[in-house]
Length: 289
Length: 332
Image 1 (cartoon, one colour):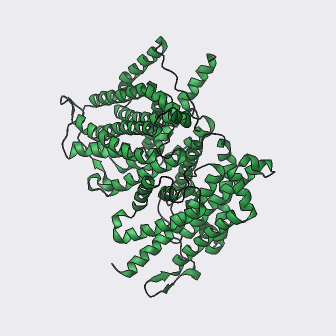
Image 2 (tube, chains in turn red, blue):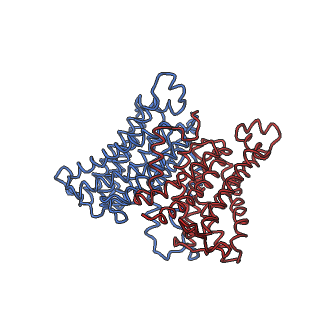
């Protein structure tokens, strides 16, 4: 095996890891605030990719504007869904949240298959990010480096915002004890809408970053979300930094498996999940309640 | 705490229920003269599958998002046993069902330690592992699946290629599974499961090893799902990737939810409705348009919409709502 191939696959692994990180981060925010495991997160990722493609092909809006606009659009769609559908089931068993978002996922995905068919649509890499650097041991395409960098920055900014700022403090207070937070005059229902919007906007941003790498198709998020679930189980729920670290680690491991044992590459994360569940049921960074 | 609608009523063998049992049996016997038997065979397999799922969610409160793994894997094993090993019908079904039981034990062993939403996520991820295995193992034939599985003869006497023999055999298997699960739900074991569902800490403090009972319920549910999957594979002569796909796990959840979670007949009714919709949609011509105006969206979108409507508007499901209405009318 050549070094070139090894580092190439590790880079792909790192990119996948950054997508896992953005999706699981959104998942964690939404779960913390709303108590809902949003299985539709993959559909919002797909939506992000599609809106990017549409903006370019229908409105002539390029990649960098999309990077700013698409998360806002996807976040607004998410907020609308929270306001109209999810809001109605907060007082029910948590199970219904999972089932409702499952229905939403199937509906969005099905409608996109209906209008756009399942074939992938290519999205060209923006000219500012074409080409690459020769690092000696490997060739680094500019765009791939950019994806890793951009998603890392996004994740860290989100982490900082939640852990260190006053908005984040209010958010965490609402997560910890919504009734008490409300008694202090915080508009918790609005906070929940915003939280859901931010959570799915992260998935939308991942969709923008993914568009030039993976073909944009209605089914691009369907399998991804199941892998992200496994990642979340491995990391354990509760720690935001844990979610980011686990995602990148498992992405790298997946890339490594592609070199060593290609047939097992799509299974390795699930096998790791099995092992972690046997050894440490609460997950690597989770606390046993 | 998980609080699911408790519609499982205590067993009373009044004349009333006996009449209903009689009517159900007559419907089961008469159905192939009214509807297309192959459709009914498929329906009964999915109805049994939904009942198995309901056994876990309805009485134990555990939402499994990976039940297609048992259904599909059992189908592959049963199909392989019948086609490649040349085993007779009964043994092939037994092999498939046993494999689902083993798989259920493995899945259950790791997943019942986590509860609620984590349990759902873990079962979904484990089922995805089975899906990838089905892609890659040599005996499942990846995208082609197993086809032209020989049906064989029941007890070595009655040829299952006769459509009526096939129907009544499937009906007998369904009835066996249905009654067995019904008995289980109403046994002390079933009551214990409901106790765990409604108040787990109390069940623990009473000295019950909660996880062991959950595991038992999980294995039983997986086994019956396997029975349904094996029967389906042999009756329809095909075992394919769709049977292990997460969409099948989702569709069995929908059947149970739509019919009525925790009710006796709910899963059967739900399976009937979902199967009828799928059957109807797939029989439409490719260029079919509603009022000649717009094409119907694909089945996934329709199922998604039903999911949303069902959860927002009638969570008790069809049978559950009817029961609720009857209870209110009789002033209970």
